[in-house]
Image 1 (tube, rainbow, N blue to C red):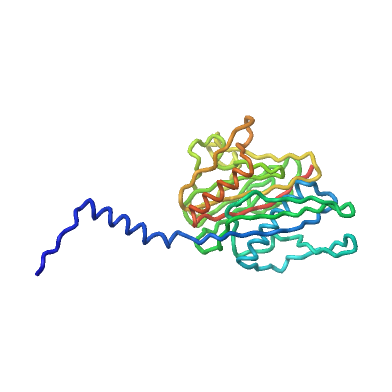
Image 2: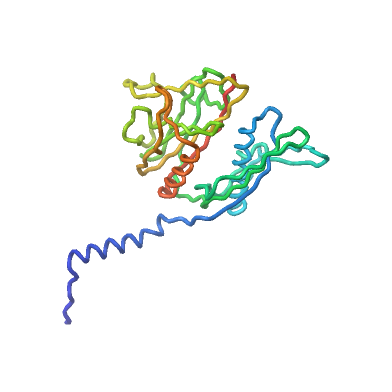
Length: 296
């Protein structure tokens, strides 16, 4: 029998490590696509320029995703028609009911806005360019519900009044980590979870356990719980809540505390860049975006 030379132990370990890394790549890598889209939004009479720009941006991204990955429309999606300068313009008024088969990861460049007025109607056109990926079955599905002035699911609501309290019901099928951000119309992003006094940058949750975040009365030790009371001096303020969950640890974005007892904040641009990076690294991360409004 011929002699078989044994590979040195250190070299063998290195070889095994490299081989394992190469074999693992297909399990976690997911193809990214460059996408682009354009949408023209015809604002309602009571909408501000900032509100109209946000809606145009959101729908331009949805259009870009739908063009590459396809769209599934639910039955409650509908459209409205406006006649401006003798032409009929049809726009989706409930694009949140539209499910696209892809998800936006990050911007390649800043969105471009064009603002015009047609017969006293504000018209905003937005062009977007970014990277996106097909929605896969890897991301973890979880439950997240916004609650108004109550801490169980029967208080589910997305229409708030000035001085209302906001809570978030949360439950996940596996152990993991959660973060919650709020984006206003300016737009600015606020970190709601982890809480202000959390210095680790992560918030762990257990599988199957029901959580109600921002409820200091629900825990025996409540010194680190931030309570949320909403305020508005306008007819209507619109918000987006981003709830992120992953079975793997991830750290919140770098942010700044501006005022005592107020959530830490960062620019929407910095938030978007962080969100894109963390979602590229974590294919099992699930994200739910909940829209709600506050009126005076």
